[in-house]
View 1 (cartoon, helix red, strand yellow):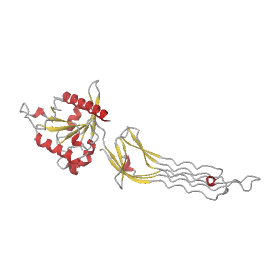
View 2: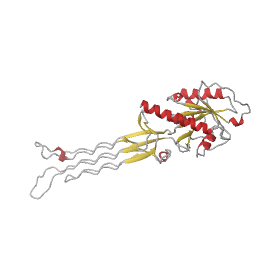
View 3: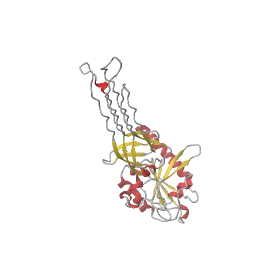
View 4: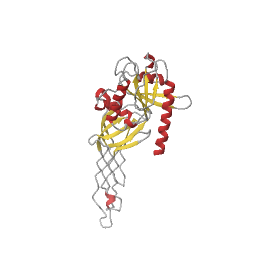
Amino acid sequence: MLIDSATIELRAGDGGRGCISFRREKYVPRGGPNGGDGGNGGSIVLKAAEGRCTLLDFHYRRHYKAERGQHGGGSNKRGRNGESILLEVPVGTVVRDHETGDVLGDLDQSGDTLVVVKGGRGGRGNARFATSIEQAPRKAESGGVGGSRIVDLELKLLADVGLVGLPNAGKSTLLSRMSAARPKIADFPFTTLSPVLGLVRLGHEGSFVMADLPGLIEGAHEGRGLGHRFLKHIERTSVLVILLDAAGGNPETDYATLVGELSKYGEGLVEKPRLIALSKIDAVTERPLPSYRFGGEDVVEISAATGEGLDDLRRRLWTMLRVFAEESESAG
């Protein structure tokens, strides 16, 4: 199962204490100050890594503490810096402050890093405080306190195309026919409990990633049927496929329900480019299909069972994605 959220507590290392020390050499009974600085405390850094798919590791371990810096020593010896901690998270992870809800970072590119808590600075030794007036200072600084924070990690899948439909609309079957993904398929609602990604190839032209999301029901934007938890995964998609069952439902009513939920959830979902796919047309006896009203949107008739219309769907989605990329590049 996809683990797409976690809460962890992070504590950076404190800085090491500065040293109070004086030179003790033969024939120099009152040598000058030579107390070294303390080392800096270790920080905690998050890094987006391609090999990570879930936040499961952070459910088993929730507390992380970086090493503190070593104290300074005599003979101007600086304390060693504390070891920092690097935590790898999946690409697409959003980091929020647990108390305020503020977004600290959005790690949506492989290799992105975020210093979540910074280690305390090492304290200065007494050699740093020597002046022409005070040549033998007997003071040094304590190390700075490392930062601490509780953060919420939220994974939003990175897919080019998102499949949106009511339970049992045929999303999992469609993804299995268009890609090498093998989602769980059964003839009852809510078979898909976690988003599933599949790579759709178009010969030598290219490929794109399609996401099969759990079925939405009315009230999904309020969390019904786990809808609120999974609607967030559509936020990063470029194009949506509204999948409607042409054989066993009322496509016009189903369409109104799905678009309504996208609109109520917000985050610009209803403004995304979308294509309507009428599925299971192999089970419809009435041909041609009725002229449904979908507000003039593009409609493609498909059957995952027989493969009818799937090549057309691939090509049209590929064209929409290229147009979207060109428009985004122009706007940027």
